[in-house]
Image 1: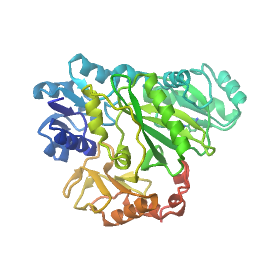
Image 2: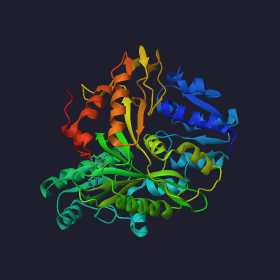
Image 3: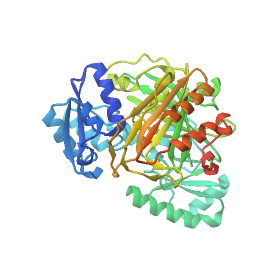
Image 4: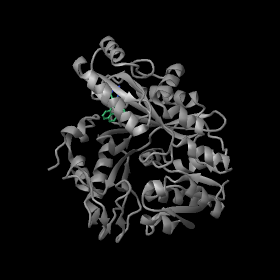
Length: 445
Ligand code: MV4
């Protein structure tokens, strides 16, 4: 087992990882930028090393600074959390070269899922359903027009180096193709230094349903059922839940097996997530695989009663997994508490938290690095915590969430709490009647 893990991250996920390490008897090293000097992850870790200036490129993304921190603290493994370097194959490779275990998959696995055309091709060969579309990169506008005519409009253009919605263009008719093609290519080049784009049939009003998986170093894989992440705004998830209100036992079986096939196809090692689009007829299509722990992993932990970070660390040490799948025993919902103003287009609202009271009680979990007096720096993402509830039924989990949100007091900054309070009372949300377009028509009162 590892003796000391360096956590290459900040905020609630750094704290989340420290907590599991404590339970496992593993020492922790926090790293922090000068803007995070007073952050909770710094106080709760056994050791802490400053790795640079506030800008992520000078600190949490700076591989040389991180490796120096590993060296001076004698850590034997790095946990990357999510975001920052979590899906950076170069960083995973550097860790390996220095004899430091990167707690996650190998660089090759990251690369095979990081390039979306490669990932899709791998899935087709493995027999995992993918959205119908063109084979490989588009070479010209004329090719794009021909393909789109064949599969019929609407279609969607995506960047092969993309993911998470960046650089996508929906094209409804041929007249729009030339402009969409050029802007998609230009955006891809600017965002990813790779202007490769490809085409898919546009699936209208889909749900975003993802399957948690785990694989070990010996080829065993299992799935841990689904999370519904359809409540998103501009590709930012706001609410996640497990199980999905749209799920059936049969669909879970099919999607679970498909997700395991996806993981097995790259001999996946670590915990990971296979994202699917699900249409109204319950057809499902592979979208992408996230080769990291995700923000919303907690709802899975609550419904299967299982510590995913502990599993991730155990797999990294070479432990075997049983290979048994996990099915939801409870219902869990997560609301992301962001320092944003929901009345003002979710504009970031950094600054000092003057008063803080966090909810508690039966069925309530708060994963947060916030405390009274904490100053939220403007340099990083605006999530200051996750409120997670668990109950036997979806209705009860929603009722508990409404009660817990009502107890939450955060003063000094604007937060997404008013948005969540209204969503929990929304009839369509309560009926489970939503898809990825739901928030476009949601009006905050
Ligand atoms: C799609 C799609 C419809 N059809 N692909 C958005 C994020 C990126 N991972 C892929 N995305 C989409 N791909 C086809 N062929 C619709 C989306 C999409 C979406 C997906 C999940 C959650 C929210 C979304 C919001 C808008 C569009």
